[in-house]
Length: 186
DNA sequence: GCGTCGATGGCA
DNA sequence: GCCATCGACGCG
Image (cartoon, rainbow, N blue to C red; front, side):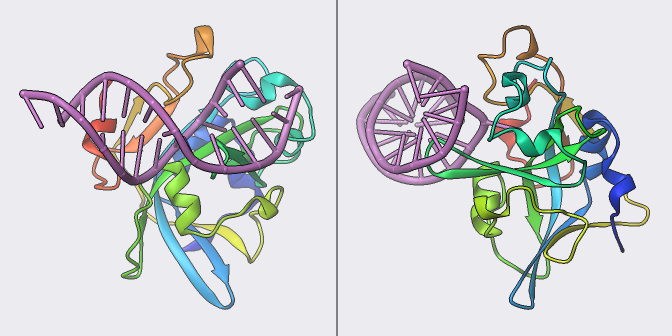
């Protein structure tokens, strides 16, 4: 397995959302590595995508999305859940991929089957907003020969996004038990 | 199994 | 006044 570099992240959000399925997310805390295999993601295409925060323009909150690919965009939702995103595309395009679910590795027992549960278990905090994922703290590993069977559906929780609410921009590994049965419709 | 609802805080 | 959510509760 090889650490993923800048070039991996510089693709458009749709490509990256698919490419991230099956890769390993590593959070290194006090010498211990928490590792998980990503199995569900969503693409947010930039300012024209009404479901994307970047459609609100460049603000203090969305600033990192407008920056270079491969950085973490982390924000708080519903007052208690942190969402972990990876900035995609070219600098200024403000595209991102939301990581929605993963499988814990190395015998680690944790429920990572949801974007809020994932950040809680992996101890991902808002203080890591803007963190460079091409580094040694929070990073990704590519798995040689990784060829997950991927299904494509509409995104979850974006009913407000008008003509964008039904866009098929959610991806998940059909063979993963971390994607619940009830989240497989459509 | 399903529908409904409250928690809780940052942001525009 | 919204939310890129979760978990608890009440069904029958």
